[in-house]
Amino acid sequence: HKEEHGHGHEHKHGHNAETCTDQTCTDKSHAHSHDHNHARFADRFGIGSFVYSRRRPFHPQRLVDKVIQNLPCKQNLALSAQLRKDTKVDQRSPFAALVRSKGFLWLSNNHLEAFYWAHAGNYFEVKKQGMWWATIEPGEWPEEDRADITAEVQGEWGDRRQEIVFIGIGLHEAEMVATLDECLLTDSEMEVYRSHWNTQFPNVIQTT
Image (cartoon, rainbow, N blue to C red; front, side, top):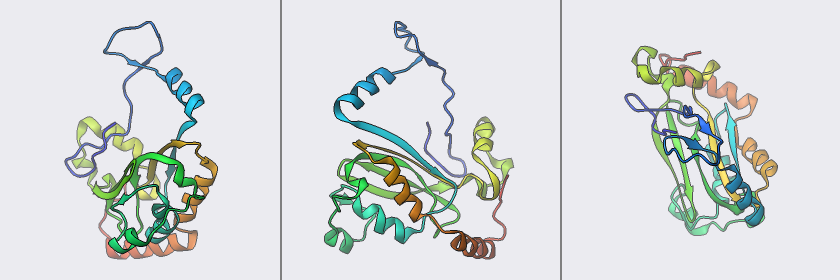
């Protein structure tokens, strides 16, 4: 799973390796299923995970207010210095149980670039990852990645999306998803977004 975006960078989300389910197989060239181990950890420690996927941008301020400020991180580089000093994690927040999360962000204040969400233990940051493939001429896509990129590019907004995996103990998935959904742009905000970016970047390539 390659996580680099941008022109000239690799950007794959497909999983090409076949998974071998034979528990007696010792061939290291095979990808082996470890679901039985995951199940034991989940049963013993209550560890669970899920992937949040949406094709709509986040409103940055709502994402900070409802989610980022409530991550259980002492070193939260996504917050301003003042917010880091003043913010106290709401232990009632469903995000307080997270131990790790990572993935890609689409933020409404940047139409061209993807962001990488990186959280492990007490550390969290959001950083620019590179250009969305939809901003790059299809003829410039790497030939070896073309099939994967084409699968990612969908509809009006190309490959722009939210794709974050959350891992934690006793996760309340439904509550977390509902909170994340509240951070997305509303229908009326999407109309403003569409008008604004079509005006600001009329030559951006949209591939369907």
